[in-house]
Length: 300
Image (cartoon, rainbow, N blue to C red; front, side, top):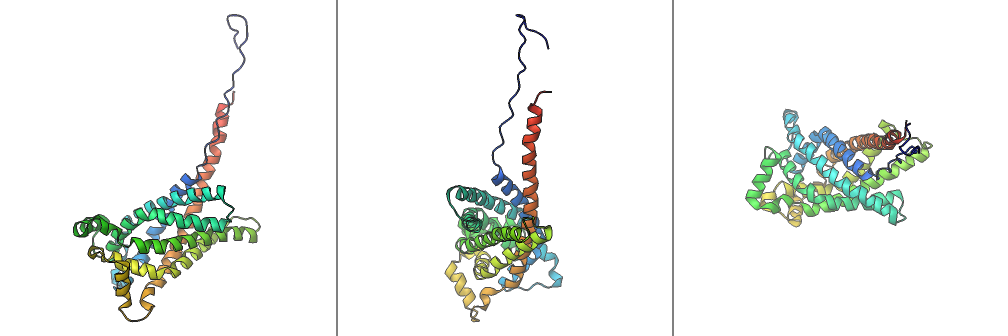
């Protein structure tokens, strides 16, 4: 070390460690959720297509196997966008509730899930209208579906089924996330704090998804009937009357309940498994980042 011109030796200056990065958990949830949902939707797309075709009274056999994958790319991409929007609302709402209320984890998840279902529906409904039209064989792809519907009935047709979507999604997502967020702490208590294995994550997510799907199937049937006749601008009442006109009591409202519960159970199982893995990986990288920054700031 060299002395200055006045003979004084300047003291060694030390750069202070950088401040800790802000909490990026909501961002991690959005990213992990979008990627996980795209992967899970692509996996269960054939079952979802089968459910849609059953709900509009069409049967698919083995010969139509290739048709069951129709629209899979659009569905996977759309699902990623939808759940990314959902998690933007979900994580932000849950963090706010955790700071300002005394709700337990299950209650936090229920309220945040319901709030996020309302917020994300503005993105979800137009995408779902186009994707279900493709799955029903009415249009070759989501873009063609959107163009055809707007020409026939205006932009409002893209929001066909908005009310039943809200009526279905609010309880569905609230119940699904409440069950999931309650089962994980229960697992931790039962197994002495051990994190769930991949198989256990699949079971927890599957149980949450199947239970929520079964109880909301009637609304899903009405929503599908509305979305697959969007050009005629159906209402919730007219679609419900159309289903009731079959004259078999409540049975028509539960068409597709088996494939729907199975597909939603599988979808939720795969989604939550991917989600926990991706979120964990991103959080671990965030935790390592301050350590790396601090080592660069320290003098040699």
